[in-house]
Length: 251
Image 1 (tube, rainbow, N blue to C red):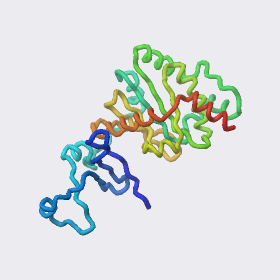
Image 2: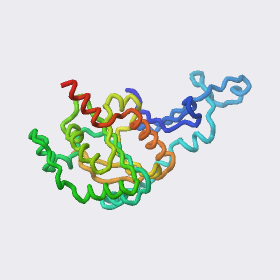
Image 3: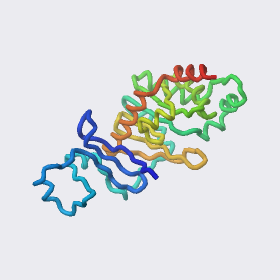
Image 4: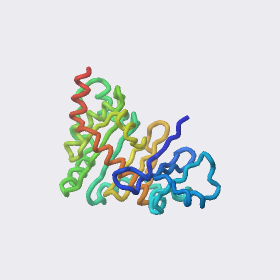
């Protein structure tokens, strides 16, 4: 079975080498970089096996992107504390949505209207939430989302494409990205918000697709990984209107 490798980072700029990856299942670290070839240098190495290749990596690469202590206690916050983040951030709030369904959507009247094939009436829905988003957007803050969509889309994903009309009306920028493209560029299979490129709120779901809690991540190297995922998602995603138009041409 192939390893599930996560790209932690690189210290070499645009050429991508040397870099650090981490095995998500075993915790093993995979490092690649320039091969140490000088015979006098190689002769100084101890315990170098015949099937092993010595490589050279900057110390800063391991400091910045090597795995940190595994016994760190997660910083779990309540959903009320999580809601407070959306008025305390200063500049940007970005969300990556990767799940195929969200149980909280399916208990709403708007979802039931959608499931019956009716026109969804968003008037007055989540009025307090909409007002807060509009107020924050008027302060110059940006709300952006990229939603990963399967082929064919699940009912929950189609509902969110409908929902994007309401979200964009209150100041959010919504884009969509096909699942195959998300996997090709190595996006994590996680849902998270990242605030001001310095604080990550990782959303944890139960087996029934219910949001159970939120973990705050502040460690700079970890935040950077999520920021890189955000940048890749926004680069390859397209505005939801364009994505919907593409789906319509295939029906």
